[in-house]
Length: 91
Image 1 (tube, one colour):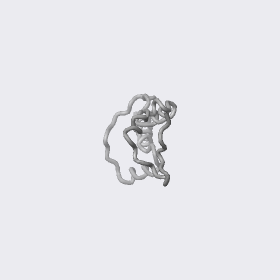
Image 2: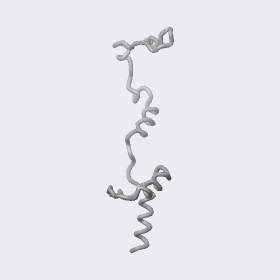
Image 3: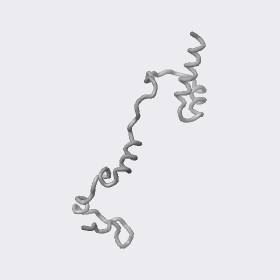
Image 4: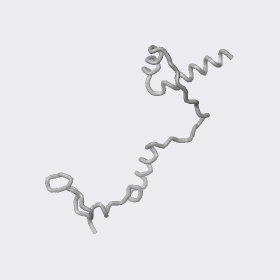
């Protein structure tokens, strides 16, 4: 049984009927490969590769925050590396 085209003669998407909706299948059934790609990239974080960091809140000078943020994504990790280096040299 074929489904009536979703596009009308003017090239517009027509209003869906209850019959149309009954014929729809979940993407996971219709295209499992595409569903897996979308699912993998949305809202799921993989397991930690190294020990979990401890969330804290610190205050820094505006120029320090601006410097690290200006370097782009990963700026908090760069601050962590600077602090690790400091700790290593001051034990």
